[in-house]
Length: 267
Image 1 (spheres, rainbow, N blue to C red):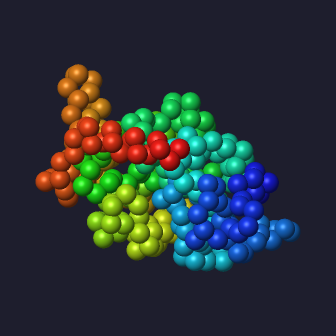
Image 2: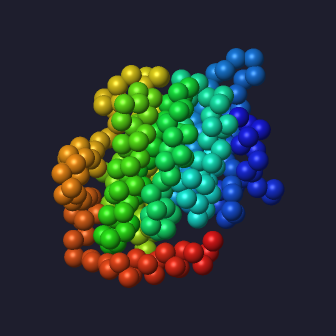
């Protein structure tokens, strides 16, 4: 796995405080070559994951080796493009964590079926998918984020014993995000890292019953209702955390299109 991950290392430094197109972060502790004494946690993320691997390493401690790759401005597909080869050496005692999808929402696209199919075939390790965080005060965009989260849950988590969805939106509030509301701030990342480390250390491996430890939210409850509603050709989005917190901050489709055009200028 190290050879595959090293392709994404920056030439100068693995320090997550430095901005680059692709950046690799590895925990300081190395595996004992004679006997595996550490559990591996591999984090694949878009820009939301900047610095998260280092924080996870601190929280998890010496019994874990945390490897992190984050790709700024990347879609879910870009973040997980090499997931098959990167996870080939992971075991049932290790973890893959994926935090991506925000840029799919900005592009107005769900995750491709082929990409999700590749991920769903991972059977050798535990997989935690972090739900796409809602964007403060952007209900139109958040409706699309809801659709992406629902897609990920239905296509990756349902029926998979080793897959779980952690809904970040149940633990975050507006003080955990930067001023513009899109990215987690340092406080939010510390909170996310702490909760993830709790889940990892308190979970028996392989995962036997994710209902005992995963933090389910309105997303999961609503997903079951939406499926039945959709079958009657009367699809309605349920109440999301964002629409409940920010009911008086409307956003038009035209404004959302402006965000997408702005994002395209950076690609």
